[in-house]
Amino acid sequence: MSRVIADFCASVTLEALESERLREVFREVMRQIDFPVVLTDAAGRPYAWREIGIPPEAVTVEMSEALDPRNPPTEGPLAEILRITRALDQKNPPVPMVIAGTDQVVGYVHYGESQLLREVRWVPLVEVAAFFLFIALGFLGFRSAKISEQRFIWVGMAKETAHQLGTPISSLMGWIEVMKDRARPAAAGADGVVLPRPLFDQTVAEMEADLERLNKVAFRFSNVGSEPKRKLGDVVAVVATTVGYVRKRLPRLGRGPVIEERYEDVPELNINAELIEWVIENLLINAVNAVDKPDGRIQVVVERRRESETVEVQVTDNGRGIPAGDHRRVFQPGFTTRQRGWGLGLTLAKRIIEEYHGGRIWVKESHPGRGTTMAISFPI
Image (cartoon, rainbow, N blue to C red; front, side):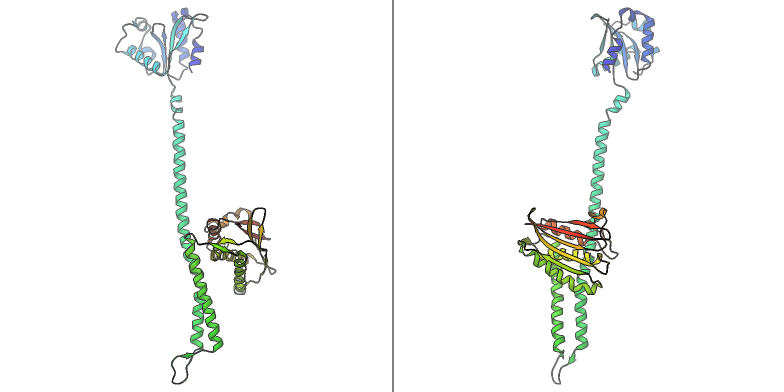
């Protein structure tokens, strides 16, 4: 701004300043200015001003020319102009007007900031305030989402617990009813009842299995909320045991996919066998539910990846597949494609694998209508 004013006034001559006509020209030019400015002669007498809150007609030419710089007035419009001039000089040094080709100063330009410039100065502060407001709103939104997610997880965990406990409890109740129905009074003179030996042996075996299942479910859920204990174990044995358990359940599920297994020799891993079994069981049940073809097939593979020094477990099915946009969403709490699902299985699986075992679980490959491969990778 000062450079523009300096260029504007650089060719002013003494005769020009003494010409009332040219002073009027200056005043006309200044009417186009939108920032505070005062023009004074070399002695400091103002003769033109703009945007300082004092109309031009408030001070006549005679009043300005009669001004004694050594004894300035203390009140009136001329005194106010001088006060404003000094205030402008404190913000910006006055720009001298010199005769072209000489060093003779014939006047000064005293200027301030325009309203637009003053408003522009607030823009960075407004932007910073908006940024922090955005961060605050984002934090509140994130916090609200986390609280909502936690509530959903607790509700889902309660339902999942009931679901996990329901099967063995129902089985125990069924065997109790069988015992009541088949029990016969003991011989005369003896207390108690009698069961056929084969039925007794079968009942005890099945009830022991159900109790073991209940104990396993309780152990799994007790380890979800705390750091589980791990020890060196054979992951192939864990996977094979889980495949055997799920294979026995296939007729109950009303499905008949063939489960194929291929295991390589892999080193022992530092794992929690119960939780890994839970993860594999979730992947297998999801695969069974996804297979909707008469020739359904599920392949379970455990192999060593020497290039990355990891052990990888793959569960592949030829079922419905997962759309590409849902590959990451399948691990989010509440996401499910099943009408009666709660969308927690893969969420818990991800926590067990990544947080508790330092591994990785992901959708390795999936094509709608052709099947899905889920993969788990454990560091050696």
